[in-house]
Image 1 (tube, rainbow, N blue to C red):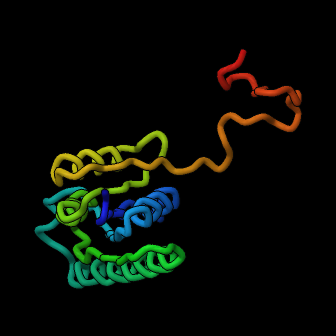
Image 2 (cartoon, rainbow, N blue to C red):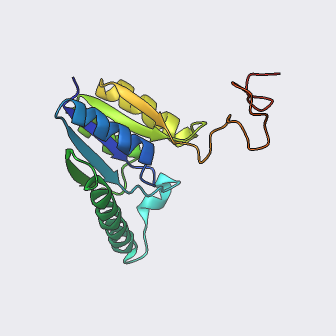
Length: 171
């Protein structure tokens, strides 16, 4: 049974297929979904931390906090459409990596549901590995649903039972 489910939204858009699955799993066991929203700014070189022109840090912080509040509102609006208890947590520390933001939260959950692209890009691969290893919790990868099925009969295909276009397992 998975009562407490973490839904990290730390790499950009709301992963719709992961939201649906996390909510379905929570509903099945009267569980709770916690969405974690984080905005991470990448500073390429730590040497640049030695000097910031006046106001730079404050400006970056204000922009990150505004983006975080907006993303949290979007996530809350999306989760209100589901029939499960939920909460939306924001990570205000914009200098943390997605992994650093997610690991402490994941440690208190029964399951992490992570939406990913196909194929996984490097940031998703790193986040998955870090959450799995550092939190000690199971991580369920949920691929984004394709806009159209990869293999489905087309309108021009013969109406024979089981017919599929070439390249979909049939010769």
